[in-house]
Amino acid sequence: MVKTKTIMYASKIPTQKWVVAIYYMLTARKGISSLYLGKELGITQKSAWFMLQRIR
Image (cartoon, rainbow, N blue to C red; front, side, top):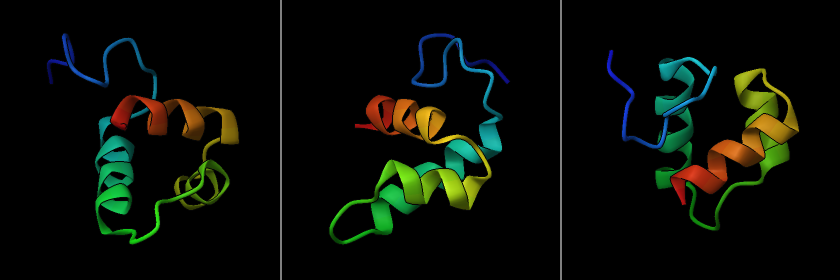
């Protein structure tokens, strides 16, 4: 899968986790915290924060 020029560029996080994170962002009414996302995806809070910033 080509990730160049996307929000997933230069990320070591698997594409499947990116898709799940985007889904959580779209379905959450009041937003989602990086702590919650990290626990749900099994990644660190720092990585989850990075993903949320890229998605936003």
